[in-house]
Amino acid sequence: MNTRNRAKITIMLALSMLLILGCGIGSIFKPAPTSTPTATFTPTLTSTPTSTFTPIPTSTPAATATPIPTSTFTPTPTLQFFAIQDAKFQGLKQTCDTDISITSVNGDSFDLAANSVIAMINGQWAIFCYGAKHTWLGTLTYAGYTFASDANDPLQFQVDENKGYVYIHGKGTVTMPDKSIVRLGSDAGPDGNAPATPTTAASPAILFQDNFDSNANGWDTGKQSDTDGDLDRQIIDGKYRLALTSKQDYFYAISSIPKFSAKDFLFSIDATVLDISATPGDLELGFTLREANGVDGKRYEFLFYNDNTFAINLWPSADPQTIKSLLTGNMGTAKLEKGATNTFAIQANGSTFTFYIDGNKIDSFTDTTIDEAGSISIWLGLLEADQSVTMEFDNLTIQAIP
Image 1: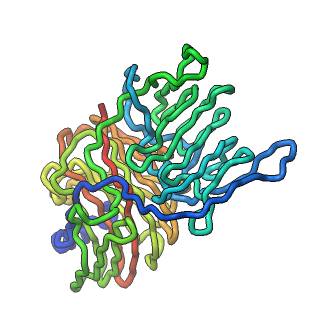
Image 2 (image 1 turned 135 degrees about the vertical axis):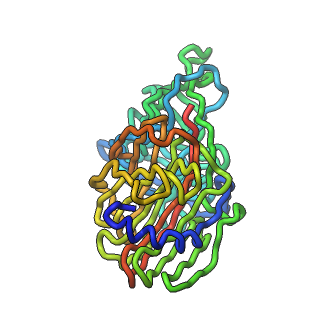
């Protein structure tokens, strides 16, 4: 919490701890196959035979943003398989027969070459659905990944329910968000086109992952009510939803990841504001890490407010009188407002901490006070009485740093 209200928050913390939620590791994707109509896209050709379609959105990736790093490692040659593990390439959890060539990218919209087959699902053109095949023409950047294809044998990928966004053919390179380069295909095949074993970097280990397709992980659900406020927790539509209504100042719900402890990692989660009545500055979304003695002990806390500001604080002990402010600032273009989805990411690597919103680096700092492993918690709070918020969380991933 921001030091501006820390004294009051201390009084309420003991009551807030009653709201600590459980969690666990779950499956990554579950299909919902249906029989879907398809449409063959054959535009009237002009000098440039292309047409623009916007796929069913899962977020708002910025192609030119400073990317969230996944690790800092050296490529390891002769791996037998390459796939991108990113939810932005598996947005629609239904099967389809989409087969397209992508000629340009503008944010989350694509220009597609003529004679492409594009499935239609729920009245919308389906791009990232299970089974979809994509051919990347030229050098294009989407969701922080840059595809650079050979002019005569372009890169081809397919959306796979279990494996991710899988390379299937072609020559070229993929520049990853951490700037490592994956080289695909070979110039030495007997027919000049045969794909060879790709050279890629070793994927960082997944320490924890859940995108809430079910409640198999045992997250706390249900309603609670007391003199501080009302809380409703649900796993619904593949999201973890929290609804808070405050009756007094400083009403919090705290969700700690159970049986998890780490020092260095990359933490990432999507957060969507479904509804809000809190005035600017009164909604607080927080992430605390390196909780060596639990959520009420020493920790680093990253706090984000609906007035577009942030505050990073250090708790060197459980005593609120020892809190130290490390950073304050502005969240850039990100907003905690109704209808907005933002991806928050924090990288803890030794004494260096860097945080990102929607792929954009916001700030970083160094601090050596807490140099040990600890748990991670998600905080959602209302700083004033008689306010409310409903928020959903998805795509929670914690990766190791090699």
